[in-house]
Image (cartoon, rainbow, N blue to C red):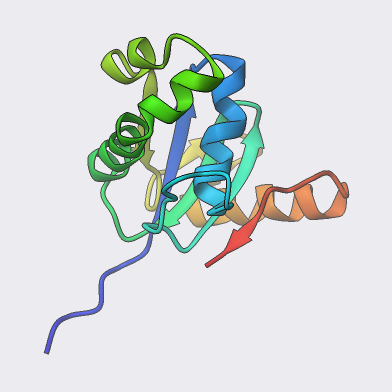
Length: 135
């Protein structure tokens, strides 16, 4: 019997052209307009414009590889929308960190789970588009 894999809270920060933000979110949403979506996560929420918290079984490097791998596969389709996708895929500017057990200084020390729940509650209570997806 295989051991159940542990969920992780990953902090994803990226510096991508504005037009790619919407595309990246459509990958996480699994929307029809994304030719191939990410199916490697359980949940995600946008914290800021270029910051996501993702619940997944993957390690940070594997999630990043999957994101840019899918973008590379879809590069031809994206090229029709905007020039420059090859530059983004060949020189990705994305930082992925496992914050599951990490403490961070904000309003006291919190682990990644508390950080995730705080961001989720804040997005839901403000009635902003939380861009929250349960898989």
